[in-house]
Length: 193
Image (cartoon, rainbow, N blue to C red):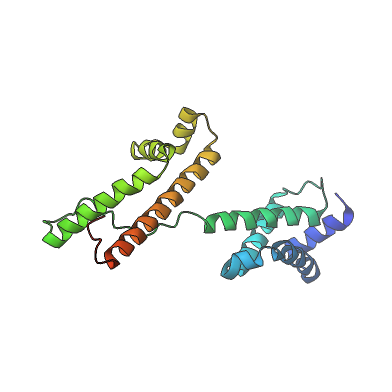
């Protein structure tokens, strides 16, 4: 480990303003490329990165294989990527696929439920067979690890496939609803989903 890095670490751990400013500058520069994508989470990320670096340095995790600046950049880049992945987690859209009402349905609810079932079946017709198979496995309660072992695919790849299948289903649903709306506007058309 370089002597200047050891001095910076010691100063940072004891609260020296110059050492803290140097590390804060490295953190800000490393995270700067992610500022636009992190939006309102950027300041939180900077604090999280400072805290993680402090904890790592207290534990002695820095071995000096690279410069301290490089080490800080790597930690910050990993923190940024982790935060971006967390922001992209599943965001569910409201659907009208309420297939089992909890009470005695009204005539309107019954008609709506029938329409939702028809829509669901038509969406399933439009997605690839592979998507239907993945959803069947999920509904059977299999974990991604079990599914990846069964299909011989890496777990991360499988998660991406499931996400893409979901996106295809949402897209197919939107198309079907748009088609239905276009038909219902035309007086000669009509009918149900």
